Length: 198
Image (cartoon, rainbow, N blue to C red; front, side, top):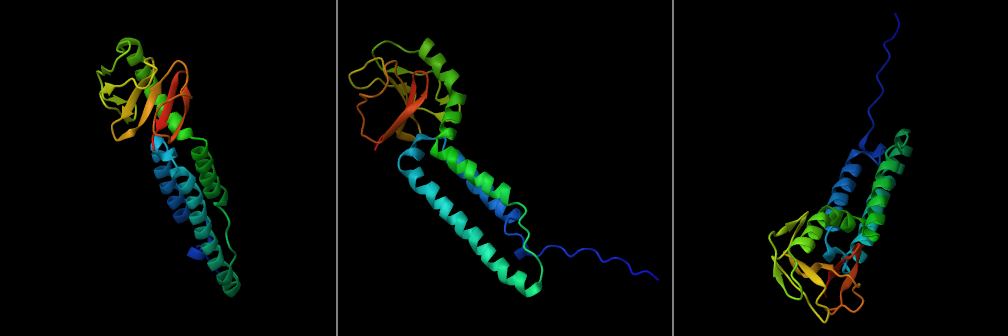
């Protein structure tokens, strides 16, 4: 009588360093970092610490899992399964590069840009602060008083409601001579810039 074939043993937890748990952790942390990366405050010193710290923590976590797998593999004769490595490392790598290039901030601003441009075209009053008809632009809440600062009355600040030191700035002549508590700043699109004060 032929013997029934035994079904293959399921993989043990130690055999797959890049399993669903690892991918879930990387995906959850990546989601949080991408969300935070949509706001200017993230790029004032925070990302210079967070991105390398995340790389170190992830590297330590994966190295620990591999270090545990090696002796188990030797003791049991069962192989380490490397599937999933490309997904985990690829996701982590793409997120880290995106944050260093400020891609989430540009994506977040893209959702607000048309409304901000409409405000400039329809509501902006020459040479003075003016009240906005709305307090939300895309993902961003802004204070409902748009301000003009410094020596350039064509420059308009849309200050973020959750961070009074961050703003989108509309300027037709750049922001090289911007008066603000030196933090960090950058270009977004067309005449739009972002700032985060110290």
